[in-house]
Image 1 (cartoon, rainbow, N blue to C red):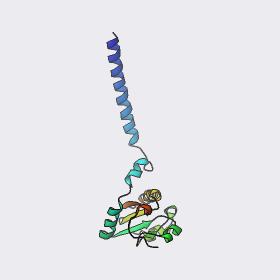
Image 2 (tube, rainbow, N blue to C red):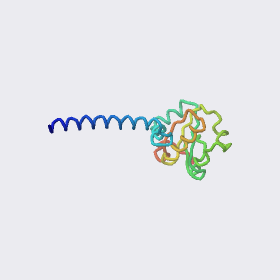
Image 3 (cartoon, rainbow, N blue to C red):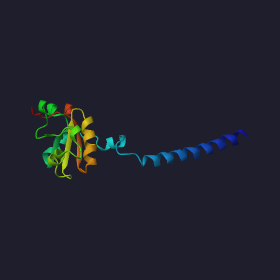
Image 4 (cartoon, rainbow, N blue to C red):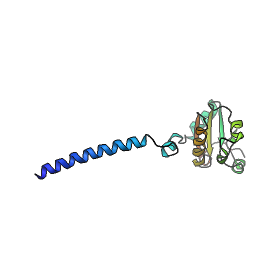
Length: 144
């Protein structure tokens, strides 16, 4: 008798587990893009990969730190567009980034603001964004 009860409990637990896993998968289908799932989408590439892209591709290197931080030292040929100014109503965004399909390499100090900027740019319709992380991890030349 005890064996039958245990078997029935296992079957019921199995159905309950299946139901909850299906519900969780359905819930994840509706996860908004501003969650951790989106962060993985713009995970930084290695500096070596970034350097190779800069040398082989027509790209814009976008420093999303403040102008003061940019002036203290930046990657050569980078343009400064602070993260907090990336908005739909800022004409500077369209001026500096006129082609929404052009390769844009973003960076900041440590990588956090560049991920935020990537999300903002994607929301504005930019399609070719690559996060290169933070200048703290940049082993190559810096312009001061």
